[in-house]
Each structure stands twice: as structure tokens, then as C-alpha cells.
Image (cartoon, rainbow over all chains, first blue to last red; front, side, top):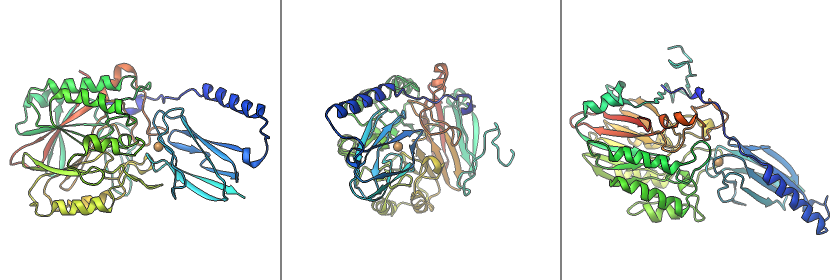
Length: 124
Length: 315
Ligand SMILES: [Cu+2]
């Protein structure tokens, strides 16, 4: 009998490259004279690790762009319950962004693994 | 066996009585089902030596062509090894069924590579899609164009061979948030209709990607309305349910129904609840082939139970 407990290690993926890119992007926006601090420019992040959206519940203000980053070795997607948005399948280290313009509560899940759920609460 | 432990010390999972005891096998074990109780007859070598006479078909699953992460940097290579095993079989099987996740990302090149390798077995293959096969831009169009000929809806169908009624179901499409695998009302209505006129004594084999019964809902391992399909199958004397998705061997018997999930040919996944997530499990390279494999199913004439032999890629 093979005992699965004999094999412990889970595979994780490096995120350094992406972080560098994001930093470069932020600098580019700054250079272009985009004023930080306004809701229109606000950004928030949800990471996907171990088949889990984190944070599972995220509160933002209207105008915020949320980016989901998939760190798993398996593709996931981000699908809003009422079909407001639906990402393509995100492979490892791929991301998807959506800008929330209206206040409300948005439930979403992974279209491949629907037991994975998350919630975005948008304040006016 | 203690109440909450399996024989080998792993926690026993008992969720609303749905799953009583699961059997993991690393090396191939021949199972025959007699009087509703699965009986192990020995390892694969002995099983093949016994040369079960009858109508035999194969199940392969979760080839994930395109996957190249550390858990298996060459999923196409291990699929080739599985097909080489098929070609080397002394008794030629009648056909293969593939229980989904043919590809990892539904890319045309992945489908092409899978087709090229699998067709080398020179056997007819009956497919059902996994969730990884319908993530092209048009969500399943690529799969249906290649494999959907003669199927209904999102790809379900049935056929008869060797005196057995085979039913391929699709439970990976249009999944609902918070839910599990799903068949949907249209497919269940079709199934009810499909079974009309079939005599209770006809052996039935049902295959689908995600397990039709509830294996482990915390990881989404089950089908929301699978019980409705199983209820429609209740009157049949011999029902065999073949699934994939969970990349490990689990078998159980309930009444006239034998449930079986196959190993992947690409990478193993952890036992339910034994890891933080159901993602690919990294095992030492020299052990990988002992947790990958395929299954052979034999229908013995005049006998109700089908004999299932699971073979790993090792040895
Ligand atoms: Cu997912």
C-alpha cells in the first residue's frame, strides 16, 4: 500500500518576478502623473493559494480595481455569481483584474472548482 | 479496524454515511465483487496470470497533457508509458474509456498531442470531458468539436457493447458557486429516457469525470445531483461507476453498485483531507510511477460483478 502521508511537500511557485513587474507598473503610473489616493486609482489584491481565495472577504470602496493572482499549480478562474464578470482560466502566476464601480456585495467562485468561493463588499 | 482509523492508520472518513471505507492501492490489485463485498484476489502479476476470460475494456484518466510542473515535468511522457502498457497487453481489450482531463489547459496543441499518443494504442476511445478540457475561450467548443460527435448536450451519450450498457455523463459544465460537480436537469431527463426499455439484468457501466458520489465535499469531490442519477440506476442488478478527477484509487460497493476512481497518468493528488489542498502532490521522482496508472475492467459472462484490475506505471 502506498501511504500518501509518506509524501509531504507541496509545490509552491516563486512570486518575485511578478512583484517586480507590479512595482514597475506602479512607478510607470506615478511617472504618468496619475494621482494616487483617489478611489479611481485604488487597487486591491486577492491571492489564490491552495485552492483558496485570500482574503475570502474583501471590503473596498467603489472604483477599486481588484486583481486576483493564481499561485497554484492548477488553473483557477474567477466567476461572479450573477455573471457580472468571468475570467478565463488563470494558469500558474496569471492574474485577472476587475474594477468595481457600484456599491454592493459581490459573491464569486472558481468556475473549475466551485467549492472555492469569495466575496467582495464595495462601499460607495 | 478502529472506529476512526483505516487499517493502515489513516483517518477513516465517514461523512453522512456516504463514504465508509476507501481503499488506496499503490501496486495493482485485482478486485472482484461477490455478494456486494469487494474481494482482493492478489497483485496484478497474479491477476494477469489468472487471465480473466470475458469482455475487457480499459479506463484511463486525467492525462493532463500540457502539465509540466514539478509534480510531473513530463505528463505527455507518462501518458506514452501508459499507452505502451496497453499495447503490451497479451489479451487485447475491446476499447478504452477516458474519464476526462485529457489536457491541462484545453489548448489545441495539448489536444493534438494527447490524440497522437492515445491513438497509438489503436483502440476505439470513448471520452467524457474533465473541467480542464472545457477552458478554451468558447468553454467546451474545442472538446465537442473533437470528441462530441454523436453526443447530446454538453457531450453525454450511451452505447452498448459486450452485452453491457455504457453511459458517458458530463458533470463539469456550468458549475454553481459553492457547489460540486453537476449533471443538470436536461442530462438527468435524457438518462431517464435512455434507461427506458433496458432490462434490469443488463449490466450498466456509468462513467464521468468527477465522482458521482460524495467523496469529500470540502475539496469539491462529488456530484451535487449524482444521487439522482444513481436513483435512476437502482433497479439494475449490476452497476459499475467509473470516475477520475481525484487522481487516486478509491473503490467502494453499495448494494449492486461498485464505485471506482482511477489513478491519473500525470500526477497524484493527496488522500482526502491529508494536505492543505487537493493540488498536485510532489512525490520522490523514483516513486512517481507507482502512483500513476490505468484500470482494466472485465465483464465475465454469466457473472454479475465486473472485475477491475488497477495497474501502476511502475514495473
Ligand atoms: Cu479552481
